[in-house]
Amino acid sequence: MASYFIMSPAMNADEVEKVIARSDKMNEEVSEEHPNDVSKYQANARAFLQSLEMYSNKIQLGPEYQEELQDLQDRVENPLTTPSAKLITHLKDGSLEEYAIKRAKRYQQSALQSIRPFKGFESNAELTANDLEKELFKGSWEPGKAKDKK
Image 1 (cartoon, rainbow, N blue to C red):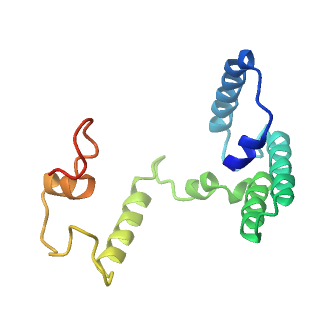
Image 2: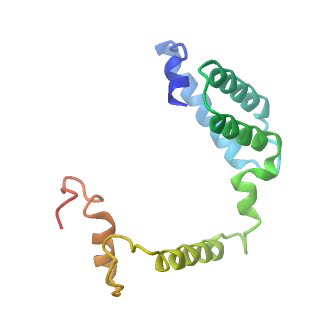
């Protein structure tokens, strides 16, 4: 996708702020639409995806890219296939917390059954929150601190 934008004509510098503001407004409006409803920007999405498809054909991208574009086109045509529409089926009392915990436990079980444990977790010892943070992030969350220091 980056190559698509690189190969697109540059926009006038005086229009950049207007385009960003319009895009922010569109993003906000789409975020407030019900996930099962067709977006009011469906025509814009169709046009953009058609342009992407023509570009991918022009530079002869492989079938895996065509499949991705078809998946995106399907989401535009059928809102029930979007991630948001799929997630709302898991809402309980307006929250996804129960679903998120269920998924996290499933990922945790998969990790525990893994042949190769994740680096830093080979001993199966119970880790404190501080130890877990240290093993997972290696200091990368702290500005100016080297990632390889402990």
